[in-house]
Picture 1 (cartoon, rainbow, N blue to C red):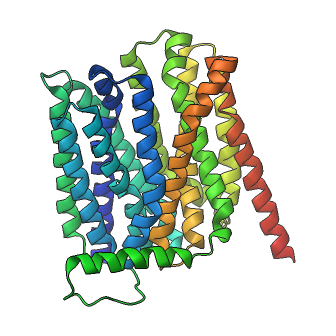
Picture 2 (cartoon, rainbow, N blue to C red; picture 1 turned 90 degrees about the vertical axis):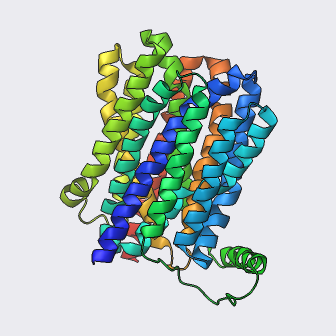
Amino acid sequence: MFNKNKNLNLVYALSFMDLFAVGLTVPLFSNHLRELGASHFTIGLLNSLYSGLQVISGPIVGSWSDVRDRKSVLQITLLLCSLGYIALGLTNSILFIAIVRILLGVTKHTQSICKAIITDLVPPCDRASALGRSTALGSLGFIIGPTLGGHLIELNNGFFYVCSFTSVLFIVNVALTSVISEIKAPKKGQINQQNPIFTKLRYEFNKSITDMTEIDWRAFWDVFLLRFIFGFSVTMYFSQQSVYLKEEFQLSQRHVGYTISFFSATGMASAFLLHYITSYFYKMDDSCLKRLTHFFLLMTLSLICLYLAPNFELFLVILVPFSLSCTILRIVSMELMLKKASSTHRGSLSGTSNSIMSIARFVTPVTSGLISDKLGGHSAMLFSAVSPLVGTLVSLWMKLRTVDKKND
């Protein structure tokens, strides 16, 4: 029990440090590229490159953690991320930055591996609570990171300091991972550890690909669809948020940043409250579908109300239920997927889930841009309510189908 609690607390710390590190750099990346002379198209291309590589590498890295073990895979990927961020701060070449983004797109899977570790450690009845704490602490990191990064960037050669600090945080996470007690994923066969390292890596890569073919992917299409709808909904909103707030309420960029921090803080509180919400209102919701239906509907209504908000004060009030729905849908949709997963494929499915979210982040900017060009920016904000409405209908259909199967 002591080792289990120690490991869980270390995973929570990893989630916090990871999103703290990401929050330092990501909000500043586009502006840094503009200062280097990159066009908007180039910036979009680099962001799409990262998301596209996440789509491909997520299931592979997750399956690798099933074949090898979570701890060593996490250490290797964290170390490579650390090297990537220090390289990002040392270069002014757009081409070299693109190469570094390729490295980060392939290796940056900390959150999905952490979720797989939590699933290994925690029984099904406690997973939602544990995932909620991990999400809450990650949100806290994303509140602090952008604020500190905004101060560091104002120094001479500020982006270098931001990237260096980010790199150090990944090294700290490597050290934290080394303290975790050995977490072995179930394996179906081992290679002789005396073999050369490249032989072992080739074996692990081949076995990772082979194991992925053994998963019955058809059994997860509905869960992946809900994850995609959720990712599309949130990304559609955030792709419009800054422009909408500036045009509708004449907010400065600083106040837009405060609004994002308020959203993250509300999300953190929601994640901590998830256990109590589930205990009091959803005790019998073993399938997770009742929660998914309710909170997709809450997200739909919140987005419509955000569009209709006559002033900024009311906009902030409505952000609270929107943030609550985002946080709970992120956790509960992951819980539903992990309930269906076998112990030998949790890493693969966690990585695939991350890839589904990356696909949503990949296609949303294009969709948002087309709607804004054809119908106007405000229409794109209203259109963001369409996808969670679809999510409400899909989860309701899944719930009714489950009831019919039980009655049969």
